[in-house]
Length: 417
Ligand SMILES: *Cc1c(COP(=O)(O)O)cnc(C)c1O
Ligand SMILES: [Zn+2]
Image (cartoon, rainbow, N blue to C red; front, side, top):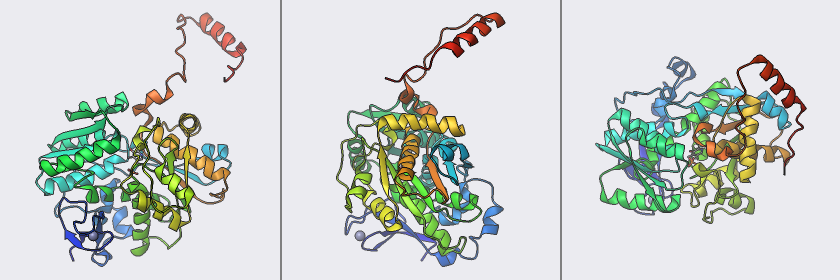
């Protein structure tokens, strides 16, 4: 076999290389399979460490066309230790994988889009497209501009203004749909049948999803080629969580890390929690939900990889939790105040869910745990509306400031109602 190929996840039928995401025989999703023996000699710690600090250092385990030359340094975001947050959560050995600063558009979606567009070019598409809850829209638009593609982006019309603006600015065509993400996605599948466009998360989905593995590769490398005991991952379609697990398995298979069980934990917003609800109920399939949450980037009521996410979580001995919108906001503030990382609503979901998992004793304080922070808070500032008042300006005089300081110190803490 070639270095990699598409195969059906369920019946195993091989599909080679093509813009297709579903097996025609059994209607199951396609997955990229690799010939690990073909990269065993070259995919080594030494070789990887000599590469520039971006996700392309793992190119041999990404489905990239022959001769692909990357034009953007995507990924290799910081893995921060988080002692202050750990203290607040009553734990130790806590790390933040900070994709709030992933380039070029400040979310982990830059990783998946980078791989999808490499294949879009390979398949000869001149137009790329996506259905998006926001971050994917930003990333497709930006990378399409740089790559010289036309971009069409389909979104639920109630997305955050910053995510809409942060798509249009790149010259992408943005089509707002009066409906949920799930309805937008269904429409995109139909459009993909009619138009010769590369939909990154529809007909290119199998390739796209592989980009998420680089989060897992980086976590292991940044822990000096050791796997953590636990990871906590936000879930929308359920793809990222599966691919982090796949990355860990591949590193074990190729001997870059010692084999070790890693517990995989999923995080959702209670207002859209089909995966965590199924995990808690012991069910192996999701029941679709109608999303109602502030965490719009995670608001997928019928997640394409939900079934596999449930499997990944339960087989690993992990769990899934979900948090209210109030907890999301509180945990955005908590992460910012303790570690200086301003995350979007999805990060609030992750921190809030981790807090619950520690409280429940499902994550032990002496174990190494990584929280995946996947997006940037500047894109969802509306989540903090009303949290910080604009104060009246004071005259630029020292005496005025001293007066102001006196008043500030004297005013009692405002009481929460
Ligand atoms: C898309 C997204 C996720 C989840 O991605 P899936 O792979 O669909 O589960 C998590 N966080 C943010 C910020 C996202 O935009
Ligand atoms: Zn099949």
